[in-house]
Structure formats: C-alpha cells, structure tokens
Image (cartoon, rainbow, N blue to C red; front, side):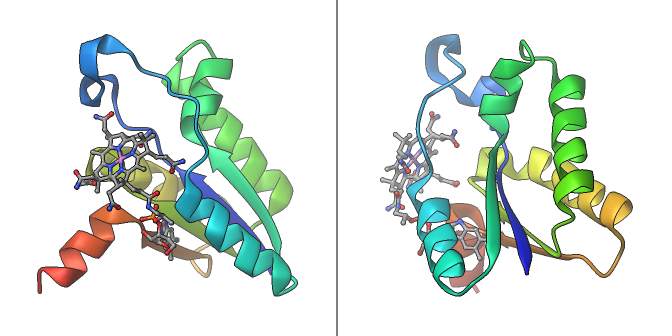
Length: 121
Ligand code: B12
C-alpha cells in the first residue's frame, strides 16, 4: 500500500519570538514509516514546514506542492501527525486528500493532539 505521512506546520503564532522554521525530523513519523516499510509498504514523509520554506513561506504554493505529491504518489492512506497547533492545517490536508484521491482514501490522525483527546474520554 502507498502511504503518505504528513506533518502539518503549526502557524507562525505558535513559535516563540517569531522564529518559524525548525529543522528536525518528527521521530514519531519516522518510527511509523520504519514499521510500515518493514511490512512491505511504500512510504513517503511530507514535512509541511520544509515545503513552506522551499516556497518562501507562501502557503498557497506549499499547499499546491503537497497536492502535486498526492496526485503523483496516489497514496491509499494519508497519515497526519498532529500537535494541537497543527490541527487547522491538518484539516486542510485531509480535505485535499479526500478531494484529490477520492472518498475511499483513508485519512488517519495521530500524534500528541489525538492522543490527548482520546485519553481524556
Ligand atoms: C521531543 C519533543 C519536541 C522536539 C521534537 C524532536 C523530534 N525529532 O521529534 C522539538 C523540540 C522539535 C519539539 C517542538 C515542538 N513541540 Co514538542 N515535544 C517533544 C516531546 C518531549 C517528545 C516527542 C517525541 O519525540 N515523542 C516520541 C515519539 C516517538 O512519539 P510521538 O511523536 O508522540 O509519536 C508517537 C505517537 O504520537 C503516534 N503518532 C505520531 N504521529 C502519528 C501519526 C499517525 C497517522 C498515527 C497513527 C500515529 C502517530 O505514534 C508515534 C509512535 O508511537 C513531547 C512530549 C511528549 N512526552 O510526547 C513534546 C510535545 C509533543 N511538544 C509540544 C509542543 C507544543 C511543541 C511545539 C509546538 C513548541 C513550540 N511552540 O515551538 C513545537 C512543535 C514543532 C512542530 N513543528 O510541530 C507539545 C504538544 C502539545 C499539543 N497539545 O499538541 C508536547 C506534547 C509537550 C507538551 N506536553 O506540551 N518538541
């Protein structure tokens, strides 16, 4: 199965002192990608912050770049890793996945925000 793992970018307001882009690989998504690859799946990781930087922080251009990757890779499952501040962009990514790839596309959200919500019930 083709799996696209996406780390939506928190908005600039979530960052202290206006510093926006940090250079890091989310270890949670890296763990999941490793397990899936060992299971024989094709996995790509898309870091929205990186795409934003490559597109001079133009959100529309960064969104178009992720849409292009969806059209080319045709993932059957899109996994989102969400901190709370990344939820608004995560909703946009989920909507794009369903619109571009079809309603049968699985969209799964994980990470600190969903974990906190589940454990609060
Ligand atoms: C290390 C860390 C960082 C590092 C990350 C380093 C790295 N390489 O990953 C740095 C310093 C960069 C960082 C930055 C920030 N962090 Co931080 N960070 C942590 C910390 C201490 C550990 C995270 C971690 O690596 N866990 C280990 C990995 C393996 O676990 P994981 O990422 O949670 O992933 C697992 C599950 O969540 C799940 N999962 C994750 N993604 C997905 C996706 C799918 C589809 C599925 C099914 C499952 C799944 O599976 C993974 C494997 O078990 C947590 C606190 C904590 N105890 O979790 C805070 C924490 C995640 N950070 C937090 C915050 C707020 C931030 C910042 C927004 C702070 C800021 N204002 O700058 C930024 C966000 C950066 C960004 N771009 O999003 C909050 C998030 C709170 C919230 N409500 O969402 C936390 C929970 C701390 C807290 N209690 O406040 N952080």
